[in-house]
Length: 260
Image (cartoon, rainbow, N blue to C red; front, side, top):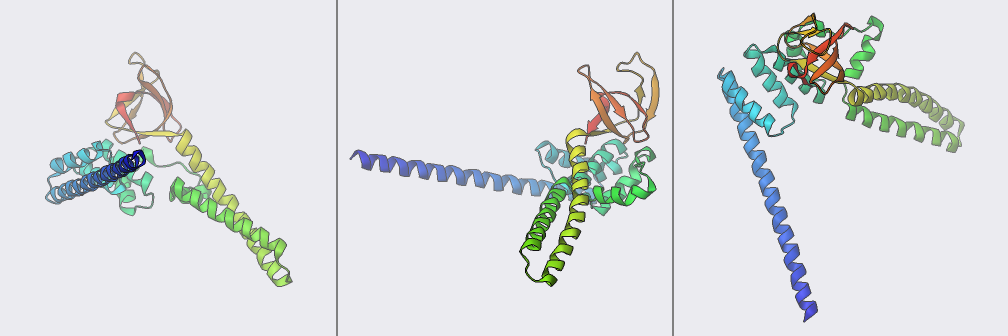
C-alpha cells in the first residue's frame, strides 16, 4: 500500500511539474507576443511621424530587457528624428555591437556621429581593422574553432597519407590552414581584449571634460553630444577618466555618458 501511495505521489509531482512547465512556456509565449505587438505598434507610430510616441514604446521594450539589434536601430532612428544625437549614437553603436555588418546602422551612425568619433587607423592597417570590426566575438570564436579543426585534420592526414600525391595535398592544406589560424587567432585575441578589458561610452549631451575629477577643475575639452569615449578608470566619487580616439584625455561625471 505504501508503494502504491508513493507511486501516486510521484505521478502527482511529475504532473505538477509538467503543468508548471507548460504554464511557464505559455507565459513566455504570451510575453513574446506582447513584445512583438508592442514593437509593431511602435513601428506604425514611427511611420506616421509620431516619433515621441514611438520612442516611448521602444524604450518600454528596452526597459523590459529586450536585446535586439533591430530594436536598437529603430530606437536610434527615433532619437535621430527628434534631434537627440547622443542617445541616437548610443543606440546605433549597440545595434552594431550585435550586428556589425548592418549597413543601414553604419550609414545612419556615420551621418549623425560627430567627426571626432572617426577611428584613427594607419592607412595600411585599415583593411585589417575593417575585417576585425565586421565580426562579433562569437563569430570569431566559431571561425577559430573551425580553422583549428581544419589544421588538426590536415596535420593528421599529413602523417597518415600513404600516397605521395595525397601527402602533398594535405601538406599544402596544413600550411594554408596554419596561416588562416594565425590571422583568425590575432583577430580573436584583439576582439576578446576589447570585449573584456575595454569599456566605451557615449556622451549624451554636449559637455566639457575637465582636467581633474571634480567641478573645481578647469574645462579642457568640449565634447559634442554623441562623442564616443573610452573609459580609462572610474572613481567611487562618480567621475571617470576618459580618452578620445585622438589620444586626448580628461574627466567626466558619470551622469554625462552611457556605457555602450
